[in-house]
Every structure is written in C-alpha cells, then in structure tokens.
Length: 137
Image 1 (cartoon, helix red, strand yellow):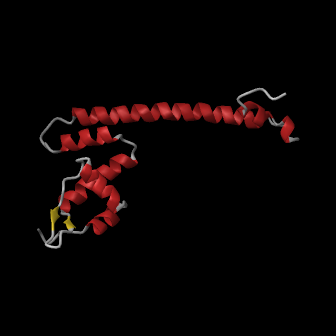
Image 2 (cartoon, rainbow, N blue to C red):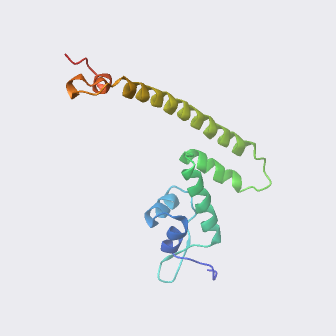
C-alpha cells in the first residue's frame, strides 16, 4: 500500500462520519473495499477519501442513495456525457422546490393559528382546537 494510506478512523475524521458508516458504504458497494495491512487493518488511499467526500456531500445535499450510486457510476467515466448527472441534480432541485412550497404552506397555516389565539385559558385555546383531530365540546 502507498505512503498515503490512512486508517478507517482517520478517514472517518476527515469525512466527518463514523467508521460504522464507512463500513456500511463498503457493504452496499458505494465505497470500494480497501487494502489490508499485515495486521488486517483497513488501509484507505486518496481515492477513498475523494469518493467518500463526494458521497458525504451528496448526502448532505439530500440526494437519495440511488441517486448517489448513479452519480458515482457516472463519475467513473470522466469523458462521459454529464446529462445524467444534470438530470439527477434537476430532480433534486425540483424535490427541494416542492418541499419549500409545502413548508411555506405549513408556515402560513401555523401563523394563521397563532394569529387566531387571543390568549386566555387552555380550554378556549384556538391553537389546541385547530390542532385537535376531533372537535372539543
């Protein structure tokens, strides 16, 4: 193995994750199995650091595991067309736009409930009334 080999603990620290997560990514085939030392320790190289960095960044941005797997597969051919990658990014953006719209609607509704509250007792609380699944008598 090269002089640039690092242990799973060092890789985990560098990527801001845990050794268990790294082993899990290996187990599902997203991170290639590393070489082993004479003492059977995992030894990771720069290619593992780069690939795990890409995985972690994609996951931080909310890409699904399937999308990350597709992105990883596409990056193996640097001369390939990036149209698939662009489509995956567009799909993620559309998903975020839908979530933002949903959150905006939820915010409006919660704001409306808060504005309808005139204070007083819990028994007369308009927020509790609005949140209750059944009408209170």
